[in-house]
Length: 146
Image (cartoon, rainbow, N blue to C red):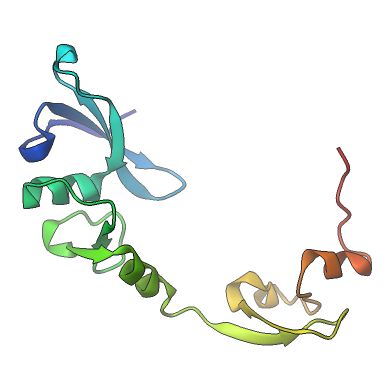
């Protein structure tokens, strides 16, 4: 069920938006429908932040531009909380704060690096292998054949 409905302006004129909160992604999305079906406009879906920035700048955003939330709160959709970043800059901003740790595979002895949050070390797991193949060698989960 949509949270609200709005008629859009600027480059998105001719669309009405139904704004939804995506449960898994925890961010708002806008389903855009043409106000007039004979206008030739197609239905589309975009993030609500991108929709607001498009109307604020009064132009369509390029495919390499992303709208970033400065305070990293995906539900804070104030214009002053937005910044335009390239995809590369947005990726590097998202990667900051992640900790890579160096481990040695107990099966093959090969050194490898993984993000700490992907290792289950937080939950007390001690045997972390470099790959799924090495993990199955000594009693790991078996892959089911279909």
